[in-house]
Each structure stands twice: as C-alpha cells, then as structure tokens.
Image (cartoon, rainbow, N blue to C red):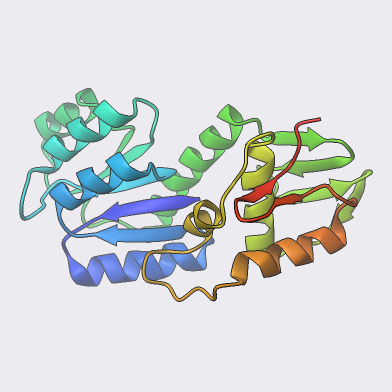
Length: 219
C-alpha cells in the first residue's frame, strides 16, 4: 500500500518512513502542504498520514483540498492539537481517523491496517481470474488451489495487475506502487518481477504489450 506522509518534523518523518517501509508500506514524504495538494492532484496514493501543523498552510486546508480530489481516500490526521474542538473539526472536514502527538507507532500501524483492510474489502479481498486466486487480507496466492510463494513486491505487482484486469498497467505505474520517490530503481526491475511471476503462474497469464506495459485479461 502506498502511503503519502505529510509531516514537517524531519526526525519524525524519517522514523515513520523507516518503520512503515519495514512493515511493507511504500512511503512517500512531503513536508509542505501545498506540495502535497499538487501531488494528490497528479496521483492518488492508497492512504494519507497528514500533520495539521504544517509550515506553509494549515493541515485542515490540505484536507479540504484532498477531499475535492477524492471522497474515499483514507486520511489519518497527526497533530499536537488535542482539544475536542480540533478533533471534531478534523473529522467533520473529512478525516477518517485522528491520532494525537505524542503517539505509539504500534497504534499508528494498527490504524493504517484498518485502512488497508477497508481498501481490500472495497477492491474485493479475494480476486480470482482463471485458476489464480489472490487474497489481499491474508497476502496469499494460489494456482489451482495450490499455494504459490511470492516475494512482497511480486505480490504487489500481481495485485495491481489483477485489480486492474483488462486494463494495461505501465511500468511507471507499477513502479509507483512498489517504490518510494527517490528510491533507486533499476531500469529492468519491473521486468524482473514479471519474469519471476511468470515462472509461478499459468502460461500467458500476464501478457506484455510491447512499449506500453502489462495486462491480465479479465476472462
């Protein structure tokens, strides 16, 4: 799952990025609200962790702009503002959850897992195409009822392709789901993941449209 972290505290942002990445999230970080608004306009992440105390614009204004782009994108507010009025204001403006600073990282992770489960439910936790079944909740894949062992990133590539069955996924779009901004990615990384997946899946399950991307036919 791709998380956009909007937080101006560098030390906190680095610690959260490291922890979330270790737990399997793909994390992109921005320290300014206006940049975050532009980023969301260009591409929606899977979820957002938003600090209200940003240096250039109030986090509530960022939240309002996010909601103009998507009414369903999960947003968790982080803030040192602990009054009931502040909490109500954030939730009324469209936040899905609220976590006051200082907080325990385990609690943040638990709340993000709720977002993840909700997203998996909305996108169908169990996806089956042909003999291939992918369960987002358990992170398991089977072919003809036999379990298939996939790496985390192989699973993420397959999940993106199966959720978008019938629609071409470009290499850039797949990379954005797997890697954070600025992370070094070899030019053939996606091709390598696809190559490994094809060894474990039925023949021609993943098809290449040369010069465009990859597709799994919906039927």
